[in-house]
Image (cartoon, rainbow, N blue to C red):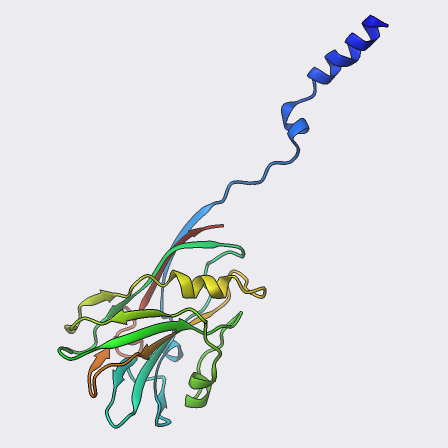
Amino acid sequence: MHNRIGHRFQRRLDVPVWLERGPQEAAPIPFSFSQQIAAGADDVFAKTDGFFSAVVQPTCCDDGGGILAEGGFRYDGVAIPVGATIFTARLHIIAKFNAAGGVAEAKFQCANEDDSAAFVSNADFYGRPLTAAQVNWSMPDMVTGIGYDTPDLTTIIQEVVDRVGWAQGNAMNFFWLDNGSGAGIKRFAEHFETNPLGTAELFVTGEA
């Protein structure tokens, strides 16, 4: 009897440790990428008076008389995996024109959509559902041809990526909206039609 019990005990010691512990979760894999606007229809200009254009430079300002001028940036094929945790995110914008002085306040939100289509009209631009999160930006004076980084945009991107319908390779729309600028205070971004190599660039790091 003693030998049989001892035999069974010895065989138990021979079981590989990984079988006793069960399946192990894979370690998260870090990722990083950058992506520029790749089509003229993906950087747009809209005004609260009904104007819309996909060939005019994105602008953020109070245009005077209670009219706001605002911009949109769309990135197709965004390489953020399902279930990702975003660490850092920003847009890098190159100034189209010199712009200085005054109170220049903006905010960024994303379209709260799984796979955001290109903007096609003013009503479409202002009719999109927006993320609850927003990121404010007290914009600096800008000099033509110089690049400027937005504040960290992690919160608005994470809200989109956390959607049930998000999939790697989907498109994401960013709104560059006025947030209390002084009347006539403007900031301008380069756009695809005049400088395809200088369009707004998205930088993201994270893990999944």
